[in-house]
Amino acid sequence: RSSDLIVKEAAMKLLEINHCNKKFGDNEVLKDISLSVEEGQVVSIIGPSGSGKSTLLRCATLLETMDGGDLIYLGEYTAKADETGKSVYGTKAELQKARQHFGLVFQNFNLFPHYSVLKNITEPPILIGKRPKDEVYAEARELLKKMGLADKEDAYPYQLSGGQQQRVSIARALAMKPKILFFDEPTSALDPELTGEILHVIKELAAEHMTMVIVTHEMSFARDVSDHIIFMDGGVIVEEGEPKELINNPKQERTKAFLSRFQA
Image 1: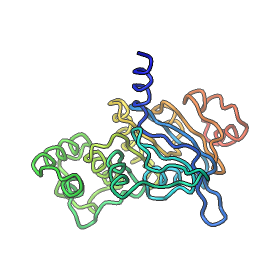
Image 2 (image 1 turned 90 degrees about the horizontal axis):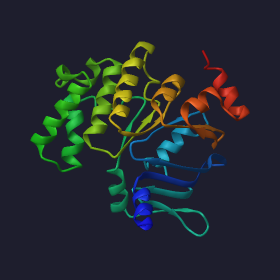
Image 3 (image 1 turned 60 degrees about the vertical axis):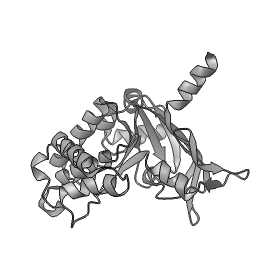
Image 4 (image 1 turned 90 degrees about the vertical axis):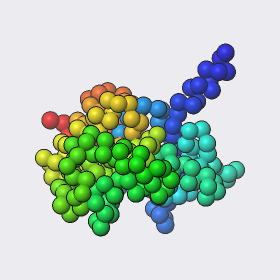
């Protein structure tokens, strides 16, 4: 019985990163970073510019390769450290399989300018997911409705506000039915009044128990939406914990200094 429980608990982890190291030239950007994300969990990563947050996200989503450490999706190794600690990546097919587990929303939308809103959303599941066109179109229209963009399916990105473009990119990521959704500073390219609409969408996804990892500089949002917050600085995890505790009562001096700029 107990072994069944252990298997069950292990299966709940969607993502594990163990002892991740990453260098750009002589600059060590990530130093021995370990974290895990469980199904339904919302994890926010905060910290100053240049602390390694976005690089960590890029390593997790295979846009960058780790120099050392393990990357594990749903219990399967995407990259595994050899006896020297160096990351050895799986085959092309294994990496492709890992990519199907996650979606990524960038800070600058990354929509195809020559595609309509509907085509931006439907193209990946049809081409990459090899899914039936009718089914994908029906789901895409549902996603647009959910994002408050039902009347925009024929519009092109240039005809939309930044907030609308970001909502389209969230719909596009969700169309691939990812197990885990990554956000890299999803509001940093937006005007303050448009930021609210994106944060609202992410809060709704959290209420539906979507598993998310969010790199953000919106502290009150991180506190309200997250189950767990990680504070990074200088390529290491300085402190992590329960959101209200970490934001309101940080233990480390470095965390206190960082958060003091945000306290109302």
